[in-house]
Amino acid sequence: MRFLKTLQKTLYILTVLIILFSTVPKKSYAITKCDLDDILNGWSNYDSCIEDSDCTESASFVEPTGNKINDVPATVSASNTDYAGRQVITDAQLKKIEENAPFYKSSADKYDLPWQILAVIHIRESSLGRTNPKNGQGIYQFLNKNGGPYPAGPVNDAEYQRQTDILASSIKTKYLPSNYSSNRTLTKENATPETIKDLFFSYNGRASKYSQQATVAGYNPSTQGYEGSPYVVNKIDAKRDPESNKTSWGQVKRDHGPIEYPANKDYGAFVMYAALSGVSLTSSSNGTTCADAGISENAAVRDKIVALAQQELALWQNGTLVPGSGYKKYSQGRSENWCADFTSWIYNQAGVPLSSSRDGNVAAVSSQMDIGQKNGRFHPKNGYTPKPGDIVIRKVGVSHVNLVISVTGTWPDGNITTIGGNQGGGRGGFNNSKVSQYSEPLNRSQITGYVSPE
Figure 1 (tube, rainbow, N blue to C red):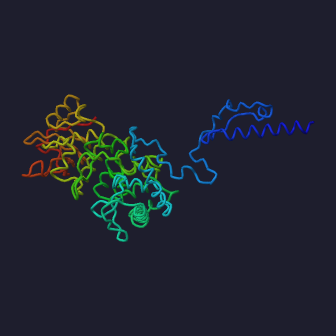
Figure 2 (tube, one colour):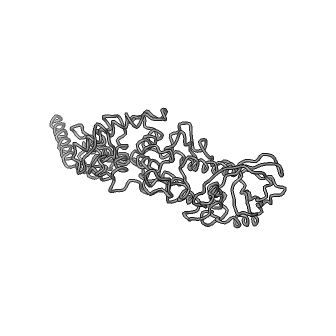
């Protein structure tokens, strides 16, 4: 009799289990909290079991075959937003990336690279297109002597994979070995922000003009040139966002042309890479940060003014900014005599704007002098030894301003070194002038006085 009861109980359990596993929907992978004793005691209302709050349907659930349902990598593992909370990768782009991901992943696995690098280059170079353009450089705008030129027209899967393989191979053999050997190790497991940025900078040509522009964000142009490239870091922060910085973050928009302002509105390659891969937009720290590579946010105001003026001078000396167009960075695009535009731009960038309107722009020499007088910061020439960061006001015979960079000696026998805009143009006027540096005595007759920043 006991045997029959045991057998009956066992059959009942098996029946309940068969019903349970045959009726639960396939996508209900969550563990449920049902006490086995309830089943043994005849309670078969398993639909009322409480779902375990610690378990949810898994994106990597393994099917019986052993293959992951999501064998294609997840498209976006970060928030997919920039520093200002705006969406980086559009929904339409995400859809195309999902479709193309098997090709990126195959090449990335073969050459031990993060697949997101290939996807980002595809976005930047052909908007994820699958058609070779007429220039013969393929969907990645990359001509390899062993793989190109690429005939214009649609690209089938085999050709798409071939071009992606060539790109991945060239990343390892051509674009990684460059000037910055400390940044050159790149694998899936060792992909630092510096390495990725430098790679994209190499792919885009390593323009020296952009290396100098890195100073806008306080980076060292000789070692962190990628920080000045819109192709790499456009919209990574407010200083390098053309929507918030229209006058000192620019881009070369014509072959062999100068930097023009503002830069375009496309996201930089590294910003898109960060959105796809989940890495931080900030540096992984290689011993050099914005603060110790360029102008510290905590530096004294006068030090900031001097450093900014010197950085702008360097941009003119190396040809990044050129007469006829470069000055519009300071004049807000206006064609005019621009010495006062330059000094007020520097003051605004240093955090001490001369005016609360027009982004601190004060385009008239007399207006800058008036502001100094009203604020108690104007100092007549006689008896005053200026300090670095002061604006030099000239209203005797000329109307001109520039900035004190250094001082030797005291009034009246000392000398000052100045940096100013709209200088050296000669008969060509403001369109032929530039930013330059020169020295002069404190008692020079043209000098009227000085406006100090504090």
